[in-house]
Image 1: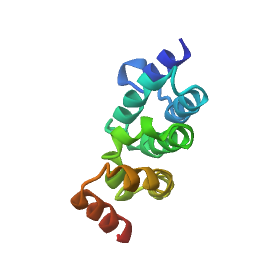
Image 2: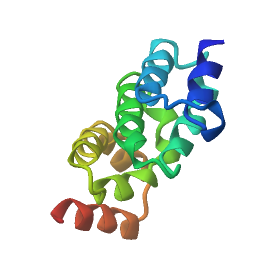
Image 3: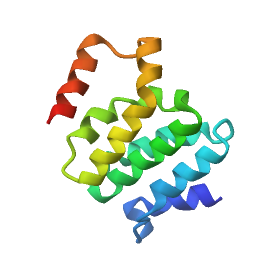
Length: 126
């Protein structure tokens, strides 16, 4: 029920703004990743809503989830290059933290192509 309310607060139809909803969702998922694994894609979708204010919270949430269960986040790494190029410094900082957490898994499992890895390095240099 709480998860549904948090997700609802992120929509225009709710009439409010769930300022910290992504962060709270990340904490909920990280507390029991197996039980709440289906929430991860919903958190990632919030990154693309019009309100850019949610972006740092989305990346923070993914970082918290990756600390406990990185495999849940590896399917959504395409958000990382965009976050590294974001205009909000907090989004960039959280994206670097997320990348540090996932890097070993990515390299060991060869989850990214060479081209994608190069894009990440270019984003970091910017």
